[in-house]
Amino acid sequence: MMPESDYEDIMRDVDRWRASDLFDFHGEQLARMLVEKKQLLPLYHIWLGVIDDTDLENVAPNAVGWFDFKSVWQKPTTKDL
Image (cartoon, rainbow, N blue to C red; front, top):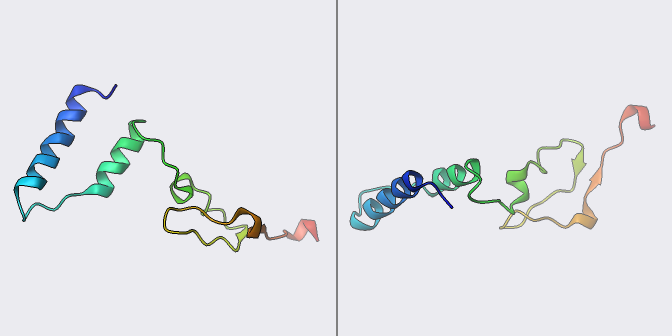
């Protein structure tokens, strides 16, 4: 269901990458483009912004961006004290 022009752009980059030792493949940029165009839905919690919450403590993601939910806790605010 990807627009043909987007697919052609991706395949052109992949073909250049496969044909040359010098061409640097930009996988992260490709992944971001696919997410922005709603072609991929990331399962990485880091990308979803879960880690950006400064009130969360003990958040240590593993290699695929998941963390142990039962070990995460939230800092109390001064109004909670």
